[in-house]
Amino acid sequence: MERIDFSDLNSDRPLKGKKILLGVCGSIAAYKSVFLLRLLQKQGAEVQVIMTNNAKQFVTPLTFSTLSQNPVFSYLWHESTGNQDWSQHVQIAQKADLILIAPATMNTITKLACGICDDAVTATVFSASCPILIAPAMDKDMFNSPQNQKNLQTLQAFGYRILPTETGFLASGLYGEGRLLEPDIIVEQVLFTLTPKLLLNQNLLINVGPTQEPIDPVRFISNYSTGKMGIAIAKWAYRMGAQVTLIAGAITAEIPPIPIQVVRVQTANQMFQAMLEHFPKASIIIGTAAVADFKPQFSQNQKIKKIDNQEIINLVLTQNPDILLELGKQKKTHQKLVGFALETHNELENAKKKLLKKNLDWIVLNSTQEKGATFGHDTNKVYFISSNQVIETELLPKEQIAIQLLQIIASMH
Ligand code: CTP
Image (cartoon, rainbow, N blue to C red; front, side, top):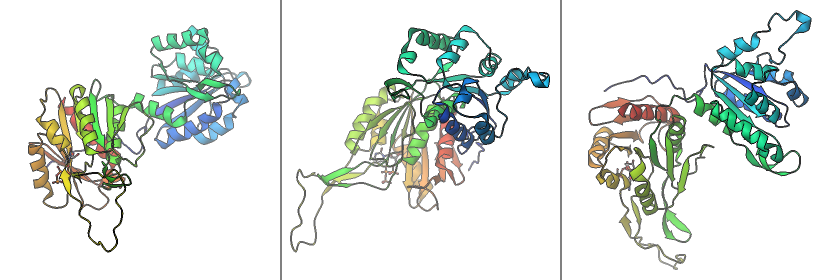
């Protein structure tokens, strides 16, 4: 059995060792940058804040310097100190892994589009060679003005990543486009930008969670699956550059704020149809769903009533389609098919049988015997099994298992 070390991507602190410059401009949304700073730090990033003078009208530099444990950079010139450090913008720009301007005002966007660098934010951006993310925030008419739209297009053409804005209530009291994206969505975009693109040009189709098989309008048969493992895979596949389609059963785990296609289904048959529909354009198919193997033969239209003195009720079950087995029978042209196996005994032997029977490229074995693994836990311990390899993992966060699986799949293409 092989042991491998996949230590380069850390799911708990994916931004560990990354230096991020957070540019804050003069918008009421500047208060959200405080939360943004915190969230970036939680992901392991070292953050330094750069402020325009106008930004200081909304949040003080003291707040940012205290929380970031770094001095805020905001003056190009320190006349009183003889201006020893006038080239600081170059030094911090060169060390940065990413610059995020959030909120970016029309003023700063215009200056960046036209090449004006008369403050700490613009001077730093022009001295950098790392990716630049712009998260605009302004009132709706300003946001939609032809000048602003043209400047955003210009920045995009220069290679800056322009994040969208949200539509909603604005500080002016108006309703419309121009709200700063929520900090957790911005952080996802930072993570997307900085994650190695191992799955670029891949189309990943994944099913997650339990199916529910109706007995009558108020009851169903299901299982304890939450969807956590599959959602972790979908999230990291997106960050690694794949186009992701998620076919979701009745999940209780939350889907993160990432732009992936989500198709909601209830029953195994609906899940099967959705998987078949998306199969032809997929290059990687992963079956993490806990598909109910059986469904009631007849689902009643009306609630089944209790009958006095009748202690035993017979429910006749029929088999659902085995989705992966059926997909394995389809003509695999370029597709890689990956399944999961949940076993209670003879684990390796049973999983290997499933790998062959379902014509899979890899199967990920979970055992109910492992403490802290399978349903509902945040951790898992698995074996990655192919026709000629067995790789055993430690007990790891499900996200770390997701990363390892995707690294294995990426190495196959
Ligand atoms: N699977 C599927 N359709 C089913 C049952 C399972 O696509 N009707 C998939 C699961 O998503 C998983 C793999 O097949 O990727 C193995 O599922 P598992 O529940 O471990 O095994 P089963 O094939 O259902 O066999 P058994 O219950 O007899 O162990």
